[in-house]
Image (cartoon, rainbow, N blue to C red; front, side, top):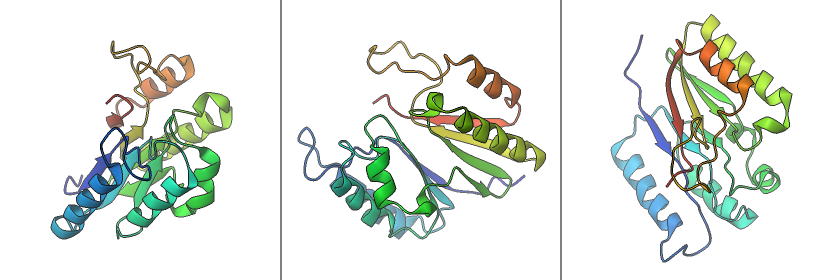
Length: 187
């Protein structure tokens, strides 16, 4: 088992052109990017769990794409409720649409919590990725936008995916292999 890996996990970037509530998310991400490039050159992966943009616009995705292109490590993305699938697909190439990445004896999996109920294929794909990781004796790190349990915070933010009996069974089936589950959405 190799525990000498570095993963940067980000969530809810809400990139927009200009400011958002007197705050400039693009400026903040550029500052973080500079820090990561200058001080953490041995990053194995960056994972961003949804709400990549605030408005889902092509311009916002172009801004994000330009920033992410400066990283030399793999970047895994999952979309959130503020994202627009069509615009994301226009801007980002297949390198950013991967569902998982293996680092040493870990499998990093991004799971689309905004769309998973719309397709049995999506949940079946996740099951296959999990099964393959177990077969390869990998520990699993799961990354998603929405929480898997209710949080008790404001009802508008308390959207969970754990209400799905099938998803619950899937997570419990692989519980001994899932090392961590990361989620955003609540900020």
